[in-house]
Image (cartoon, rainbow, N blue to C red; front, side, top):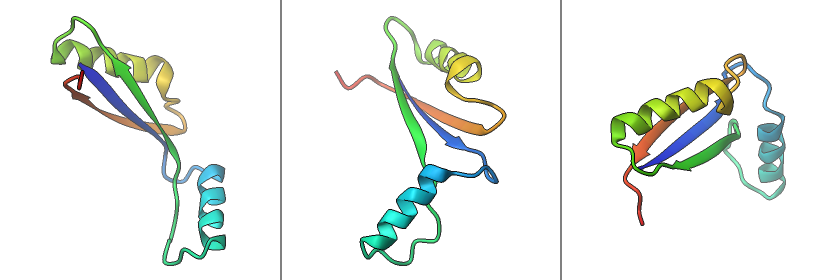
Length: 83
């Protein structure tokens, strides 16, 4: 099983990396972009776990380490390993 975790800043939290990317895109001639928000993609490969176990471990990892609950939101999916 593999967990694909997406961590983003909560709405209303300043995103300087997103602002920098937005500015860079405008400088390169891209138009019509209202906002850019940057985040993190984290993948965890589990061994010897079923889907429910991988889901519980991922939830615990997000709450304890991977996301700061004050300023970040997260979501994740559990997928079969693509060996």
